[in-house]
Length: 454
Image 1 (cartoon, helix red, strand yellow):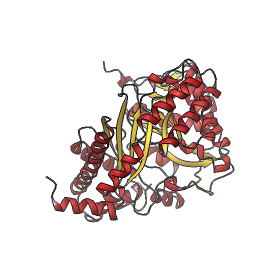
Image 2 (cartoon, rainbow, N blue to C red):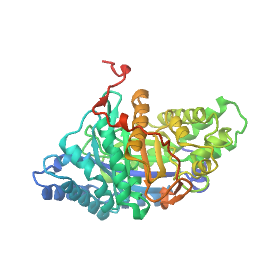
Image 3 (cartoon, one colour):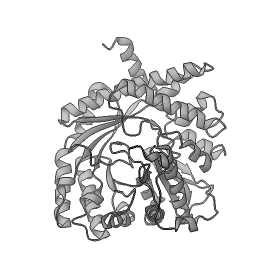
Image 4 (cartoon, rainbow, N blue to C red):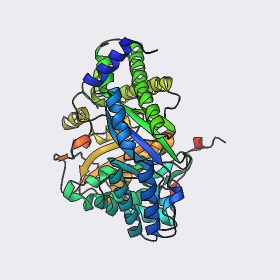
């Protein structure tokens, strides 16, 4: 039974500490939408999404009003489009037509983002995969709500370096085609290793082929709640610190579980997973960097940052799995730069560098996220950054990602304004030594030896 103390405590977390349900994401399989021509495919996709997700936004709003829990985003993820479009799309332009159909459906049902304009190319690329990847810059430039992701490696398969090279070029082309908006298209494009099938967070969300026809996944976030809890135990031992984070994560996850089950019941769609991720926003007090500083660092990026982040990430997961039997997605701590005011300040004062962020990704839930770099950065350098991050994921058997934004016309010292949840970012310096001879080798990096577990 929930007692009055717990009700009051939850109200306080919502009203004063920025607790929210960051997203209700409906995953929809488009496998049965396949057609022999692109126009038929687009009709099938539009029809299925608008039918299943018709009441998603209203349901989220109703639950938010009735329970007093902020639900920030309502989203849809779909089967990787390169799989769905293989029989109909003969060119990159055909895939762009599909992107427009997806965008139209997203607009019709009122969601803010639709993920799954994606390809899974961990070991190799089909012709359809390559066509979709080459269509990404135009698709993101011409749509408003579409998010794209490409999985270029896994612990089981190694790294597809041909795809890594292509993604460096794709990121740069996307930046160029959206340069009038400070290369904003790149904020909707993520390159992954070991991508999960059930992640509800954009831009990496897609509906995996092992998922049911439709499913409800919920992402909960509460860095402000964790920070407040740690303020109450300053100077305490590591044991007390860990227990406090774990208990707080438990409470946050229970809120998400309530929303997920209620949304599932009202929509008549199975509940999938709760993703408990400390995903920051530009709001003051809603920062993962500030949690690290509350643990004892002068600034995020100081010596000890990676250890503090490892502790935080682990305790968040432990608290989450006690609160729900179906914790999934990424679940842990996100460290985007532009979306976290504490991270932004750490970069601006010189405490946090790209190399330190890369070290931190070894122990957090995602990777190099929402990082602005100079617009004249070569495509091969971007590919090298992707390869480094994917290698961390491959060897450590974890999800890693790169969402990097080469801002055309900007250089180190400039600031880029993205607006809304995407925030703003200082343009960070990138190592200028070349890796082109490495990136331009063809083939793939083999899977690590510990991948052989059969």
